[in-house]
Length: 515
Image 1 (cartoon, rainbow, N blue to C red):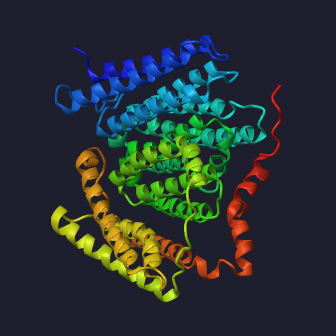
Image 2: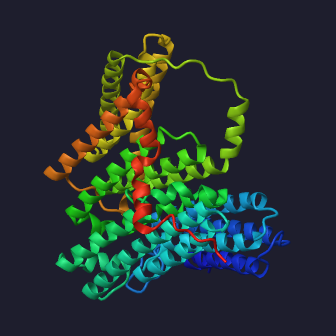
Image 3: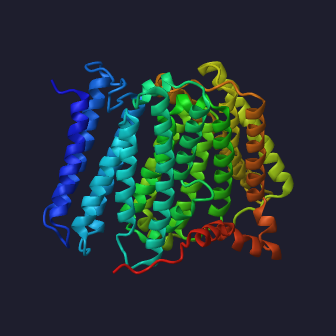
C-alpha cells in the first residue's frame, strides 16, 4: 500500500530528478529540460495532494513523529507542503517562458527544483537535524539563484547580505539544536519539546531559535537584502517572497511549544516583529517602483507574522503565511501585466482630502463597527483570546483610512456607506477566518497563553503605534505639501538609512565582479 511518507519521498525524488536532469544541460534552450522541470514540480504537488487526501480521509494516520521520525505529517506540515509545492509548480511553469533563451537556462531550472525540494523538507521535517540540513540546502540554492545574473553588482550585494543573514540564522539554530540535544538526548522535534526541562540551557536554546527566526524572516535591522533582490529573475523574487521568506515563521510554528513556554522570547517577537511591521509599512508608502513596494510589503508582513507568533496566535500566523504567500506569488508574477494595465488605464480623479474631524469620526466609526463585529462573532463562534481581539483592532486601523476618505466633505455619501460596509465585512471575515484556522490547525498547535501585565503592555503599545501611523496616513493630504514633508519622504524612501548603515558595517558595497 502506498503510504503518505512514501508519497512525500516520491515528491522529493521527482524534484531532485528534475534538478539532476537540468544539471546535465545547463546552457541556453536546453531542449526538454524546462518541460521536465515543470512536470516534476506538478508531480510533486500531486503526490503531496494525494498524501494529504489519504490522511484527511482516514485511510492513513498522520505521522507526528517519535524520536527517530524524519517527517512530521500533521495538519501544519501538510498545509505548508501543499502551499509550497503548489506555488512552486506555478513558478516553475512561469519560468519556462520567462527564462527562455537565457545563457544558463538549464542551470536555473536545476537550482529552482532543488530549492523547492529543500523548502518542502523544511515544512515537513520531524527531526531537528533534518530541519537544519534543509535550511542549509535552501540557503545555498537561493544564494546562487540570487546571483543568477553575476554581472549585476546589486544582485551580488543582495546575495551576500542574504547569505550573512540566512547563515547567521542557521548558526543560531544549530547552537539551539546542540543545546536541546545535550539536554534531552533526542533530536526529534515532538520528543524534544516534551522532554526539555526549564533550565538555563533550554532558555538559551529558545532565545537562539527566536534569533534564527528573526534573521530568516529579514526582521529589522537585517531586512535590507529583501528590498535588493529585484535584480534577480522574477521567478526567484516570487519564490523568495512567497515561500522561503516564511522559513522563520515555519520554524516558530514547529517549535511553538518551546517558544510559548518562554515569556521573554515571546516578548522579543512582539517588540521586534511589531517594530518591523510599522517600519516596513511606513517605508512602503513612499515607494514608487512596483517590485520595490512589494518587497517592503514583505518586510512589513513578516514583521506582522512575528508579532502574531509573539502573541501566541499560532493558527492565525499559519493562516497569514498561506494568505500572504498566495497573494505575493501572484503579485510578483503579474507585476509586469499590472504595470501595463495601469499605463493604459484612465487616470483616476482627485482624492478626497479628509479633515482632522473626518479622520476622528472615521476612527470612532471603525472602532464601533469592529466592536459590533467582535460581539457578534463572540456570540456565534464562541469566545476568542484577548490577543485576537487586539490584533483585529490593529487590522481595522487600515480600514479606518478608507472610512476617512468616505467621510471627507467633498466625498459622496454613497462612498461613506460603502466603506462602512466594507469595514464591517472585513471585521466579520477576520473572525470567520480565525474560526476556520482554529478548526484546521489548533489541535497541532498550542493554545494561546493568558496574557499577563507585560503582554498587555506590549499589546497596548502596538495598538497605539499602529493607530498613530494609520492616522498620519489618513491626514497625509493635509500636510503633504509642507516643506518638511519632502525631507521626511526622502528619508523614509531610503528606509531611514538603516540598510546603508548595515552595508557599511558588513562591507556590502565591496562587491567584486566574479572572474
